[in-house]
Amino acid sequence: MVPPPGLTRHLWSQAVLFKAGDGLFLTGSAVFFVKVVGLTASQVGLGLAISGGIALATAIPAGRLADRIGTKRVWALGDLLCAVMFLAWPFIGGFTAYVVMVTAYSVVENTADAARRAYTLDALPPADRITSQALIYSGMNVGSTLGALGGGIALAFDSLTVMRWIPLLTAALFAINAAFVLRLPAAPHERAATAGGPDRERVRPQGPPALRNRPYLVLQACMGSLWTNQTLLSVLIPLWLVTETDSPHWLLAWLFGTNTVLCIFLPHLTSAGVVDVDDALRRVRWSAAFFMLSCLITMATHSTTGLLTGSLVLLGHLTVTAAELATGSAGWVFQSQLQDPRRRGEYGSAGQLLNGLGGRWAPALYTWLAISWHHLGWIVIGLIVVAAAAAAHPAARAAERFAEREFPAEEELGALTAS
Image (cartoon, rainbow, N blue to C red):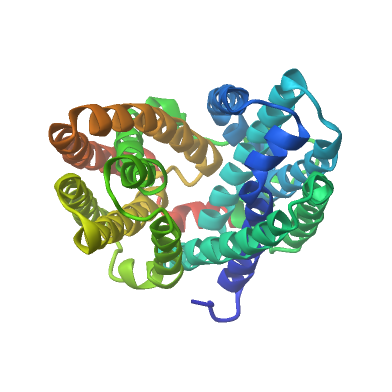
């Protein structure tokens, strides 16, 4: 689970640190927004929807910024600005101030995340990218778990004073994280982007913009639909357990705990042997199969009782976790091999945009289908993802041809950067 010494371990440690700060606040965020900021549940949801939409709209310009001035710079600056914003949270009150803050945070955090992804691909050797990203994904889950434990301890005090000042601890962790990022070695694109002083025209990213690579955009929209396994994990299966089965509510804790543990220890194993687009498309098929299996298993719990229901719900959660792990392995290959290495920030942001468009509709639609249509609804949900997996295959092949025709080889790019 812990990488050997080197850049991957540094990136793993950074992931643990960042997600610990993120998880610390998120665990108690519902209490913070309602009790401290003074919002209703509907206002919280509306603000998150507004901020998410604006963050998606600004994604591609943010990625281009990272390509122009350096991915590590944008990453560190974004994390530092996030820390500053958390310093302001205890003093925010009312819906308008909340929307402004959560929107600004979403835009900055998405920009920093696009820069992080671009830096990771740029800095790691091609042969190490998939394994390293699997380990970093494990580190993120370790950090989220630590943050959730800290947030749970804060909630146990049942004190609004404690909850009001929790954002300051998150701010401190984010500031430390920004300093950590600045100490990482410069990636090849970082060296090129910061070379030459004020004359930046000669290092402007070459090649066609990401929005011209239509097969890649279609592929990312399909991947967004595959990533709706997260909707099953965090929204639909818990709602189904509570409203449509006789399972005890405490089983939810076991479901989330099991998913977290598996996503800490298994990504390195499940991504083994995934090296090219053929392997990635095989994982896409696995993901769709596990997703459909989860739908069928969970659907059956509508007609069962007692221990059998609880066992089936847990099995459905395990199979959708397998879908999550397979989707992650495929996505890392697509990012590594189908993005223009000269425009990784822009491609990462375009991927975020299309991923969002490919899956943002899922919570409302899936919930309505399952609760209203029951058995037929679950089958339709599974078929949606199977259709997305089928569409991903021609899109990936077309994106592969586009990359062969338009992108420089890694060796050629390295020579250009060195010169």
